[in-house]
Image 1 (cartoon, rainbow, N blue to C red):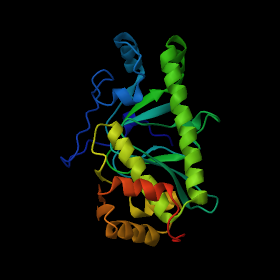
Image 2: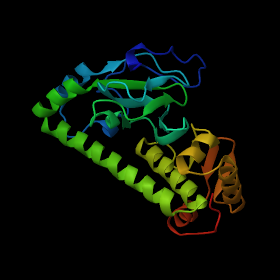
Image 3: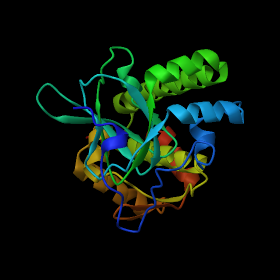
Length: 257
């Protein structure tokens, strides 16, 4: 069953994170990430009128599930979402992580049904963008259409990078690359590029990177001993960004899973 953002979850009562589902595109602090810069205020308002916003997804709740009819794409406004597929033997395979300002759900466009499922890693707010309405606006607003094509291109590029990562790289390179990806995505949101909290578990990291949980923990410990990372449960501090870049791009060690 496809559960749209407008009908799921209750607000986060923990006091740790704010999810304001009354925000508009014009006032959203993430609009420079998910909207084309060239749109004027009138065009932004037209886009805002088709977007549906609801109460946040709670941790573990689905935004949509594999095989359900495709009707919308989604922009993450806060929290984090995990995309995954179920293999023929019933195992979960993580295919991506989505953070604030990023768009997901485009996997459903080609066959008009979602090719994967999307589940909240923590309390998460999303904007639901009905695809039929988005198509109509895109015809009228070329900059919006171009921006959407760029998002699709980025998705394809990231899929190709993941295939390369899994086929050639060592465990250290894979984890270093993931930490750098999260770092750069934080920087795009004007957050710290060197200190952040991982929303996903070690199990999810291992699943995504094709590594065992033990290997993930071992690599984190090794990077900490090398004074490249400081790791405290899910809290990460990058101590040596150049060193992390070097590991991500140079084959080191023989710690394959």
